[in-house]
Amino acid sequence: MSEITAAPDSVRDEPQPSARKLRGNLGVASIVFLVVAAAAPLGVIGGVVPLGLAAGNGAGFPATFIISTVILLLFAVGFTAMTPYVEEAGAFFSYVRRSLGLPAGIGIAFVAIVSYVALEAGVYGLLGPAGVAVVDLFGGPTLQWWLFAAVAFAVVTLLGYRHIELSSKVLGVLLSAEIAIVVVLDLVIVARGGDHGLSTGIINPSAIVSGSLGIGLLFAIISYVGFEATAIYRDEARTPERTIPRATYVALILIGVFYAVTAWALVSGWGDEAAVQRATDSGATFLGDTAQRYIGIVGADIITVLYFTSLFACILAFHTIASRYLFALSQRDVLPASLSRPHTKHGSPHRASLWISGVVAISVALAAVFKLDPAAQFYTWFAGTTTVGVIVLLIATSVAVLVFFGKDRRGLSQWRVRIAPAIGLVGLLGSLVLILANLDTLVGGSSVLAWVIVGLLVAAFVVGAIVGTRVRDNTVAQS
Image (cartoon, rainbow, N blue to C red; front, side, top):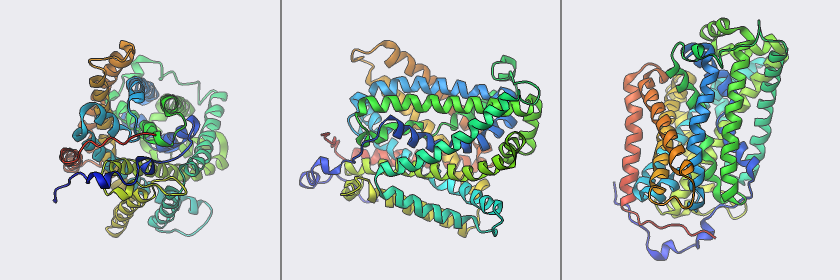
């Protein structure tokens, strides 16, 4: 590997920093749409909730979303407290660099890129079969899953090249539709009183600790992946010092309430024992079966279509996140400087976006060529990588917050900069232990693959840290 050195001052000074900065006017709502879409709410309700009911703590599983929300809100307290002191876009990379130094920051950035690109690519493995189901629903021919992935890929690449506000509007429409249909289902179940009364598992301590609470918490925590990306849109946000913290809290609370209430409603729709049994026997159709039971075949068909669009929204959201991490690294001359020059018209990281598209295209093509099962292998392997990677990012950022405010609280309260972040860190470390202990289960039962995933992330951090020692800490000036 050739030595990577900082670009000469003459190169680094051209173009001016303002020419290497993204442009936008995103408000709280727009950023919330971007990050909530990344969490793929309908995908979680249709996929993760049945798994949590079957393999986790049964009827008490909805309560794990409340626990997870509390842990992540504690993380957000310190995360948002540090936001005014991080004057560059780059999310976790920028926070860790500001507190722990450039080598650690770039190491974390490499972990972030691997994690987000892995999930963007992997979700195509769910989107393809979902597209097959939609065509089948309307009586069309049975097509290969990768054809739907290819069409979606083309649209994502186009939107990633354009202005961020276009992607935000697309995600806003798709997200509103998927949330609306699930809210309708929730209201109908509650109005009818469930199968034989509404479930009390969400508040029953014996139900919450039944079965495997650890597995339940594991599935709940990984359902929030994407919320943490609010800070990556700093350059494109309107008054980021206020917009980023508000968007972070709104996104977390919206996701948490939506997950907890909907999981509780789905359990109520069948009854505690019956819901767990049905999730165990037919988890893949659990949401659709519940919808058909309470809002009819039309409602179930609408959910089938919106499940496909939810996955598309998730892919688009992670594409925008990964592109901006690449852009942030190129601003520091870690990657070619040309990647940090936004599009003259759209103000987007168009070149970084095309790089990400190239990596994803190769991944999907290889999955098709080697005939990997799109969900059981391609998605599962890549999602396992992201799960571990994102928890590591959260932990590193929590440590960065505690170190940054360790000697000087900057006039902020002990609760905000020390107590809450410390409690959140303990919760995240516990989550990481659970994830690593059950990673082989998450990736299809292969302990070898689980170690490969951990090794890949460790290698990404080490390579990034080594690069960081050879690049001058060239802080990008803000206008």
